[in-house]
Length: 197
Length: 381
Image (cartoon, rainbow over the protein chains, first blue to last red):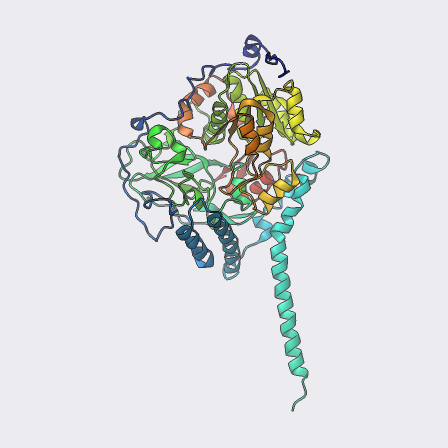
């Protein structure tokens, strides 16, 4: 008990060494790979440069305003485009990483990007398919019911939200389209029924 | 080439993409032979990580064969079988020169707070990842290593992140002989952290999760005591009781941003993105460790704020230690431990999924179906 100086007993080292393969192999805290945290040894990294050559910047690369310069190497996946690209560039240009606005704008741009991409996909031969892309067929092959049922899992209390988060916007979008179509049809019918003057 | 592509929260598919090209003289192009889905990939998949763009290919755990090298590459040649640390790093900046490879300052223009990570959003540099047939590997003379002939390919794959991170997490706990170590989370990183804690002389290792099948793995694979928090009224009190009211000497958070155990905290972070991550595991770590103890954080969190109980951490005089793992620093010792049979990484792999079925793989792993612990992606299955 912490009310007295003694430490609660644990199994002896001999017992643990006999039971656990490799017990104590890294016993010396000073002889562990992450110790010391910082050790100046640039010659060990394999780098044969003091500062790396610069990668070609094939489009204006967005960067944190906390950087003094564009880093010599960077990823080239998914250049910014559309409205989401405008938001992202604004977030990088305007706010440091220390500002919540920076991250909230980037998160907002991610949602805009998803919608832009979904809409763009409908103009291609491979439109987005929420059934195949969510992998929900794994519910059948992966025993969705028995993996959850009666297992007292703590995550079951919120998993019901997932289909709403994924499918909700699609259903809302379809609803808006249906409503717009019905409205257009009603307007056409009304125009056709109107008496000639 | 065929590659996994992100299409928005909870949606991925396989598409035909341009094969990556040499962008820098020290680049290599690697043909991926095996990749894995990491628990932290789920934060991207669920749309939690800012600047995760539609069209990006995820995957920071992969091995493969060198297909092409840039003109300044000296240490690799086409045909070499390589394992690639999840960190993209230059080897020469202020931080790399001091061994902080995961904090490289020369590879991520998008943020100064985090280094470069393959396939992990533009916040981590905007690099496409290895859940594809080919991947661009910058600084080929620095990051990748040739896989030793004796090393099993699945073991090599897990050395690129999960094993190295779990082992690193145990080291950050600064474990001393006879210490009681609590590991929160029985995913691959938690299992490896638990197994590694014994190597550092732990006297007790206790693993906490809510999934019985993962806890059973912790018992058999990592020789750990287990606690299912879903069966406890208050897991912090349980931890206090089992440590004679002292608290653990070391608690390792191997859960991160999507921790369960509190509906409100989980939903406000993982579902509605109002926090950088669900702080449940971190708060249990702060509450469950003894005064003066150490909390090691391996769980990944987003860059936004989270409701963490820093007051208790201060009042208890805790040491909080954390970082993305500088993977390659761990490799020489990990190779020794695997060779000696002390660590058996491939035993955590539960599923092998062809790249073409990766959407089902993500759903399976995300929803924890079919007793999934670690899914491996095979590009040309």
